Amino acid sequence: MNSNTHSTSDENIFKIDCKDIILREYIIDDLDEFHSLTWQPEIHEFLPGCNVSKEQRLDWLINYETKENKQFLKVVSEGGDIDELRLRLGIILKESGEFIGWCCTGIKEELPPPNREIMYAISKDHRGKGYTTQAAKGIIKYLFENTNVEVLNAIALIRNLPSNRVIQKCNFDFINIIELEKESYNYYKLSKSNWEIEM
Image 1: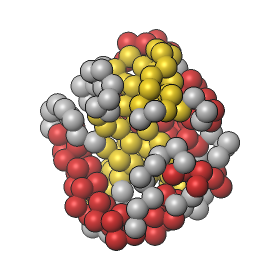
Image 2 (image 1 turned 120 degrees about the vertical axis):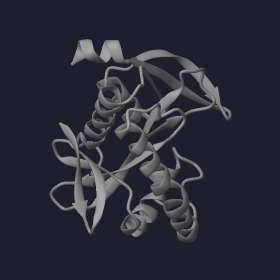
Image 3 (image 1 turned 90 degrees about the vertical axis):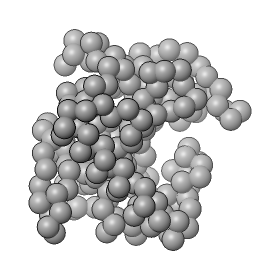
Image 4 (image 1 turned 60 degrees about the vertical axis):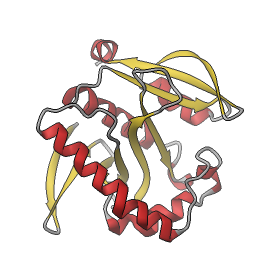
């Protein structure tokens, strides 16, 4: 698995190459596929608030998400501290180029520090094929090899069995059950030192 930058339409688009998928930074052309995914009940059941209007999604893409991705990648390229910056990557199916989900990292303020988490979502049409695990492993490898991150967190609703399985396949350690907004989540951590042992 390697991370490199390719040139697409005169822009440098950051990508992480995985087995069957590519993780790549969001681009404006993702809007339609991204928007339709957020309205799948299977996604917004577990990620309430993601199913906003297309106009809102476009505003976030242009003014926040793509800008912050560039900031994150610039800091990494300069060997700096990513601090509280977020990185948001689309999950792209290699065989079709389809945008089938996303895998992101950012600060989860409800968790005790160090509280950088990874999170992900995938289309109902592409579940159970190992793509989400590939994506999660891809972003974990990138973060531990290229940034100052030493510990990663992940949470999943107890009833969200597929999400818990992905986290477990990535060798996170179960910490405890936590309550967030009256919902019960399994709370996991993965340290860089343990990740290196498992590699």
